Amino acid sequence: MIQQFIELGQGYGDIYELCELIKTNEPRFHNAFIFTANHEGATVASLAVAFKPSGESKFMPIYICREGIPYNEEKLSKRIQIFKQTVQEAGQQENIFEIKHSSIFSEKNQFYQYLIGILRLNHYIPPMQ
Image (cartoon, rainbow, N blue to C red; front, side, top):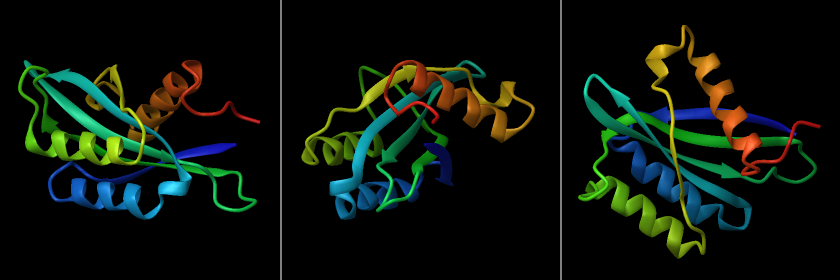
């Protein structure tokens, strides 16, 4: 199984696109994630959704809006509320992880490999075959 992150943007208007992907691909919807990271004294969130492979494919896309949303657990932003509501309407629960910020990594690809490792280790996505 090949998993790959597909970046939609940094969480502004693209949150609505991410939610629309959940609605239109509900049969393939596998898992939803909120990744939080501390950066320059503030906590930011990345929202991501993993979909099951289509047909006989061995490719699992994970769409992400990376680190553009301020995160406060007591008072969630409207964008995070919309995401959570869409996930719940699809009959799932989002998984929240505290992670390292992408700026720690020299390349974005390393950051995404780090996230794939976390998700595989915690059995939220299938292992590599």
